[in-house]
Length: 189
Image (cartoon, rainbow, N blue to C red; front, top):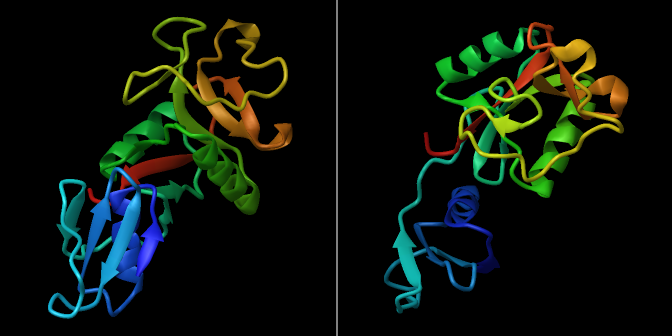
């Protein structure tokens, strides 16, 4: 079976969905995934661009959602931004960092499904107005700010939430405010 695949991890997830998959190969140049059912019967693709992999478990823990190469936990409980960050670390994860439009849309869709506002991992605690992802310390390349946000209302809003009352767009808020939160970790952690 020949499938277009954005990553080797996505290819691994596809392999795990099919009982007949005994191994898979991935071509990173062409973004192709080949699912193989039997080593003796299949024609193996050779070349520098092809790599062969054995199936691995790509399931997320209970109550976590799989999207692309990561698992996401949408907390039903509210905590401060700092306590949310600590909880995620205790789960070998981090507050979510939004790196693509498809990921942003997935998160927004799940937030709408759960009808909650959520903390995400962005903050300007270090330097006012310079928004970074807390764990990777990288700047925000994908955003979804509500109109006129961030506004640093009353001078002390330093943490980012997906805000239910603003159409599930982003808003800066007091880090001490209680919100649900989203943790993120790679499939293979």
